[in-house]
Length: 194
Ligand code: SF4
Image (cartoon, rainbow, N blue to C red; front, side, top):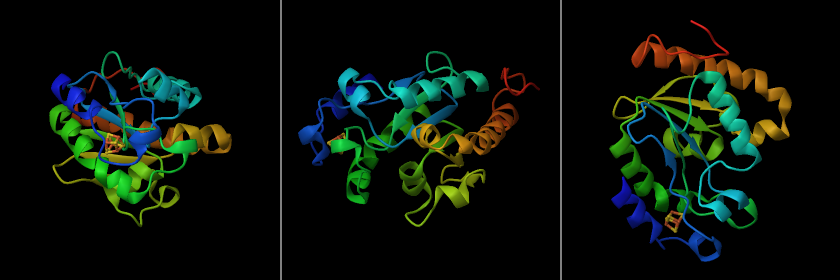
């Protein structure tokens, strides 16, 4: 993983690198059975070189804690593009596809059983360009390689639309149940007891 991180940190394959301060590779436990995938770095992430460290990141950490996960113990967090899009715009399909081999390489090393797709960019990347979070959220997608993917809202969207939090929690409860089914029947989730 460290070799891959070094390789990706030198990437200049798309225009996003021109204005980004750094490449935000991802972080977590490299053999996690669960991976959370967002869209791309924001300003705080670009400044610190770490994924999900701004307001949305704090909410994600709270969501993880409620689910019994922690990026330092049993989860990995990454984005579909590793460089910050200017003004936090949505990355284009071309940019996502250019960065996709890095994402594939990360997942090939981690080999998760569950992938949580946070927001439209992640959902479109893994499920298809026509996929819509609002329609697919809460519905398991079985990806190539036997990975179970759960589409749900991005934490930044939840900050903008707090009324969506209840629906997102229903999705995440399904994720906890799947983790207990596939990985650890004893998994302890404070907000969703066995
Ligand atoms: S976004 Fe991805 S493909 Fe584009 S320069 Fe950064 S690491 Fe390379």
